[in-house]
Structure formats: C-alpha cells, structure tokens
Image (cartoon, rainbow, N blue to C red):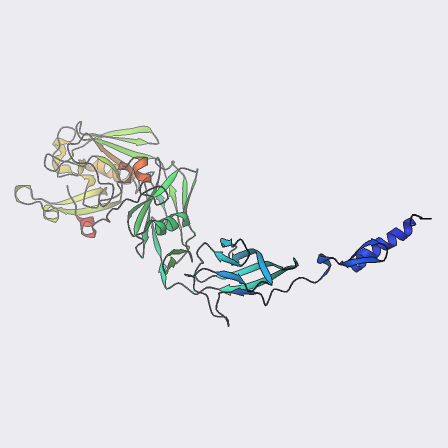
Length: 416
C-alpha cells in the first residue's frame, strides 16, 4: 500500500535540497549538482587583453580588444568605463570569441574593463582588467573669444585652434565636444572658416540680457591620428541690451534702437562714390578714443590723401571702417556722402555713440552703392549669411565651407 509522505518529511527534504544544492525526484534520490550551486567559472586562463604587460600604457590610437582563448570559454558581455565615467563603445563577435572597441580611446586616461564569461558547460564567470593609455603626442588647444565680459547681441563666439583640423570627421569631433549653452536657450551652430578657426552664432541675434557659456569636453578625446584634445577650458559671457544702429547711406541718417525701441536719429555722412561704405550687418569690434587716420595706410594718395586726428572712433571692420567724429564735414551731415568709407557725425553725437555702444552691438548699413560686407576676413560679418548658409559650414550638417582668416596687417588700417 502506497502512503503519501508526511508534510514535515516533505519540508525536511526540501530543506535538504536547498542546503546541499541537489536536485531530487524523491527524498534521497539525487540527479547531480545544480549548475548554479558550483563555484563561478574561473576565466583567468582563458581571457586575454591586448594591452601591454607590466604596467606599460596602451596606445590610444589602437582599439582595445578582449579575446577568448581556445574553446573553454566564451565572452558574453564587456563593459569598459574610463575614470570620468564615460563608457567605451564596442562590438562583441557573434560566437563570443572577441570584443573590440569601436570608439576611440582617450589619451592619458584610466580604464576599467569588466568581462562577463561563460564556460562551455554554461557556468558563469567574470574578469576585471584595469589599464591606462599614454598621453597624446599632439594636443589641440583652443583659444576662445571673447573670454569674458558683457557684449552685444551680435557677438559671435570664436574658437581658434592650435593645430589644423582639415577632415570633416575630425571637425565633427570638435563640434560635438564644444557645447554652447545659453539662458534662455536658443538654436545655434558652429561654422568653420578654415582648418583652424570656427565661429558660433545663434539662428537669430542672442536674446538681450542672456547668459552664454562654452562647455569644452575635448580633453583627451581623439580628433585625428595622434591629435587629441588638450584642455577643458571653456568661456562665459553676458549679453547686454539689444543695441542696433541702422545707417541709411541714401538718406544720410542713422537711427539707433535699444531693445527694439527707437532712441534717436543722427545726421551722418558715409562713403562717397569710389569709396562707398559697405552694405550689410557689421558688429562693433572695439573702440578707440583717438586714432590717427592716414590715407597712405590704405593706399589712398594724391588729391584724396588725408592725415587727420580722429576722436570717438568705434571700429566695425579690421580694414579700418569706423563710426567716428568728423567735425571737418559737419555741413554734409544729413545731406551728402563725402567720407572715404567711414560713417562720420558730429563730435557730440560720436561721443554719445562711443559711450552707448559696446563690442558685439549691431551696425547695419543699408542703401549704399558699395559692396556687401564680407562674412569673414574683415570683422564679424557672420550675420550676412542666412541660416541655411550658416549651417552648411558645420561638419555636423553637410559639407564644410572654406574661408580665410583676417589679414593681420589689415587690422590697423583706418579709413575716414
């Protein structure tokens, strides 16, 4: 006669199973040890790394690899993290024989790799491997302009690189690492002028009284062969009121706005035929209380030669275009264009303009018979490109436009 086991006996059997890690079909009948009850698989002799031995540092230009030796083990997962907490992307072979990094290693960094393995019997295991990469042979340093202070709504951000970055892939790395944050937030993009200079501007002018910050995450990041980011130094600026001067060369008047509201209108004179003032949007580059302006510095001689002391000069191009006091032409202000390209006004109006406007403020010339302001090379003509044209200069959007840096010799050539 068969009898059901007593409940207490069943509980004792269950407890025995849990304690011994054995599987039974009936009390006392074992089928062998449970796979999870044994010791973890020791993969130390079955997993290899391609990093140097003896504490030598790994070459950051080479990928990091983990390999399963023989058929005793397979790799099921790999996690690699550097000392800053960034994960290194990689790819695991379908058969678990190898894991290889797909992203570039950082130079001068410390890494920890955790490798999860499985024996051929299915027992789990793991290995932890620490290594460091050697410092970069070439470091890309960046000088940001402006560095600090309060600027106008038209001020572009400038990044000047210590080494050229000619290829699009490297430029994309630089752009991704240079994050621009503003409060309030606005849409913006970097634009490459040439291999070692790029500008950033928003789609529209910066919001008045906003805060702008460049966050540089480039340190240690691979840009191209043996070229890595050198520092994480960024920059921060404040944007002031929206100051705009609209210079109408045909009416000979300048209208000044603050935050969209008209402040005043000023009678002016601009460039005469043959020396017409450039049309377009210009950005104040700096201010000089006194400038000695000579025609010979810009190749003007003969009957057009001049040598004049000029006061309250607000510069808008590197080649020497200013808004300044021109008391010698006071009778033409508001009536005729008689200058050699600058915008002239009375001394009192020039002093007011000088005191009111700051770097980054907007000076826009309309209705001149002159050419249009060059976007690059003669000041900050960035706003003379529409938004689609500007974005074409980003390596993250499409093809990269080439440009040229301002001629250093042209920076000090004043015109009147």
